[in-house]
Length: 463
Image (cartoon, rainbow, N blue to C red):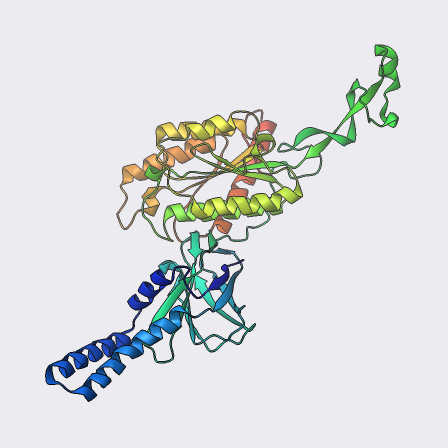
């Protein structure tokens, strides 16, 4: 990653460079200049020629240094490299700076400074000794942030000083890089999910392809079709060449729904409920991709990531890596929405069976709980992690009525087929993930027992 190409240590406009250099006089340079002027005035008043010579010398020294710096023709190239460029929150990244003198003359003392946001730490400063012609110097520093986001690094600044310390000139490169701090993720236990078995399970879809199991419905011959696929019985029946249509299985689908409504969360900071939900969504996305699912990220406002392909899902293994980075980059900057409901997300989901649905909800009132309950009908399996402000309040004692209402909404989700888990602060997603699997196993056991007794039951979508 390039922090800047060759940078001339002089200005294109000499007059403008002279004015900039005069403004770059240090305290020592200004003191010399003021002392020289004062000595010259006193020499004129007192008629002392020797004092006038001293005053002129004191005033001329900083001015000569300014002229020398302005006419200096240093050319320095700088590059910046991030290792890595995408890091989880709370993890350090190292920034490598490389300076190269591309001119034919050595440089003087160079002071190097890189501009970084305050959340990444103090601004790094380095002092580089004389760099010979064609020489290079490399330095590095570390950055760390507990807050996710996209942070610009740069532009890189070089400060050139004269040997007497009378004047300093600053030159800036124009380019900068971006450090992406993604949410923290945690490994999740290998809980068996619906549709993960081989074959065409509940979460599997079928799609047309060029090779696979034969389909009983033939189609007309097209130029380029393999003649070995000609279906002769259908050809004789229809009087034209017919080939066997084929299909192959597509990866099981999973939608991770993140509730970002501002009214659904209380508190701010790295330990808030919203940050837990964002981190949980990132962990679920990475886990499902590792398990071979085609995954997409959906928010309450109806926006889906990656948003390309059939239904917005990543279709191939190669796309999965790119989509994973895109979804993590989206979660790095996701913020609260101004929406008040989940209807837009429901409109996206009601288009058809979208496989497994994993949702991270904030506060749900009666109306939004009913909308979430209807989402279950559009998925092969559904798991909800509910972060109620009753448990995530900032020190307030929750009312008994609020806890009772929260319990009713949780029961409504479970009765509609969700595997719903209430999330409290201080516990990671891995424990709730395993708990959701145990709940679903119990629900399926109850459903099987009820069927044996002639009663009905429901399954939360896990096996």
